Length: 171
Length: 260
Image 1 (cartoon, rainbow over the protein chains, first blue to last red):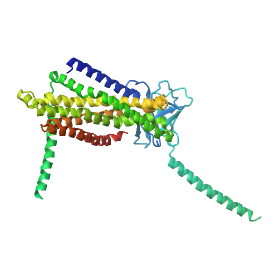
Image 2: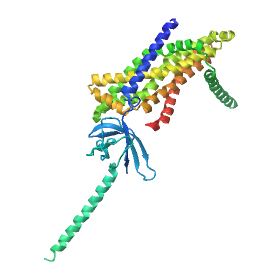
Image 3: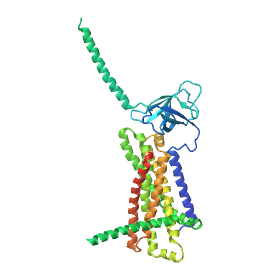
């Protein structure tokens, strides 16, 4: 039988190893940074349709990830989706006339928000709103429009050929 | 005919009595006021017996499970050209499911069976009744530290298992199969969430630790005080706690899945 002191020492080592494992899981595996890094700021943007956008989707400017979506709520008056963006990179100054659009990474990828910077010299601050927004492209709607266009094109062509036939006859 | 019905009824009442006894045991352990000065050294000894002595088997199985999941996952993912997603695959399956469940089943085999055998033998050699004769409550002295030790050790072992398994996958994926280390870790970080994945895995392991220790202690405390009875009780501990862990895992996952 080991002495009580030895047992306590071994249990202490066990606890330390478990705590080290927890820290590795938290920071290396899940990339938890929000406990310490409180710097950064939040801005909002209203969209007509956010498509498949989810919380924690990345916010990118020029393809570089500068933050993430932290909250999505429906505005009860305007029926638009109010998306809160958490910008982590402090040195990412966003001009206040920039536009936000919801894009899709690849053909089947997840949605993300792309911010296109403009030329204003004043920058967005904590709580400001991006007014210029472009909604998500919904694939079903696009296909619907495309089919509608194709249908119309066929009609126009047949109309034109009828007209040209009619024009041709009198001569 | 009537005899068969009577036997069925007797069996059912016996089953209910077992559940009742187990419930009373758990409530008496949880509701008795702990005596920290006397209880703490006992608790440390039991954490040593249940947690530290299970450390090696947990580390070894964690390493090999992480390695084999990485190997299997890589050969499937590479067909879709998605081998960079190996990190998220391994991390999510280990942290959410394999970590808590495999640790709990190993814990039931390594520590739970030992608990049952120990307490069953204490009962068979009448150590428990002699404690009562000396006005020492065996629940406080024997059962309670073992239950709390299981409750504390299981999440710690699960954390170690998760970490070792992910590093095992790193070993196979990055060092052997030649994936990019940066993509491995950054894809993992972007898809593993601290609250939804890691904390939920820890909650699962806490529940499993309590359940395994509870089943083991009840089987030992209730064992028939003969060598055959102890053998039967030890077998039952492993079978019941493995089944309880797998069943509870489904229930807990179904409750947690809203966050994913």
